[in-house]
Amino acid sequence: MWLAAALLVGTWTGCLDPLRREQIDALGPEEASTPVGALHRAGQPCLLCHSEGGTSTPFTVAGTIYETPSARSPAAGVAVELRDSARRSYVAYSNCAGNFFVSPAEFQPVMPLWVSIRTRELAVVMESPMNKDGDCATCHAPSISSQSAGPVFLSAISDAGSSMMNSQCQGQKR
Image (tube, rainbow, N blue to C red; front, side, top):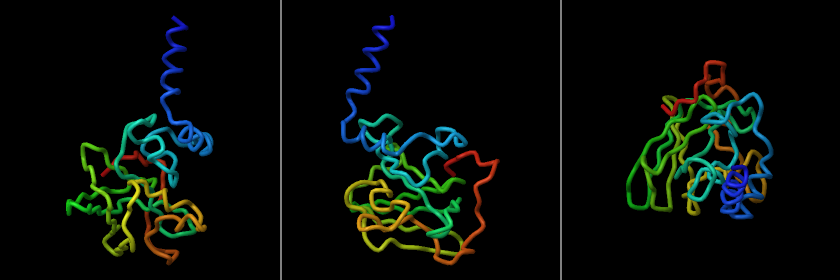
């Protein structure tokens, strides 16, 4: 019995691309205070695990939105408007951790993909399309660098909104 389980685990982990495994391992452990699910790993590259061949439920587009570039306050309830090269549109909404995600059953974009984010008060249109994949963290790491535009955020003004992560946050998609 234990041999069958070991073979199953070995087969599962063996199917993962070694580079992807290395990238996932580099993310470090989960935060103990955040359960695995819709609220976890805010700001990290979702599609490392959440894509075909990954270790979790696949997403076609996913990311995290913050209220400002430096405060790291999650922006909840933000409409993420997606439009692909086939001129199809889809709207996802950020949860209370600022995370949003789109399953293949909901929308399978044809790249490139144009993105804008909106609240009642603010609208931000991304200046360039997403060309590689639907993972916002591919270009939007937590810090600005030669390889990152920095986090996705609503406004450079520090009091841009009022959404806050709280103990009642359930991680619902809408």
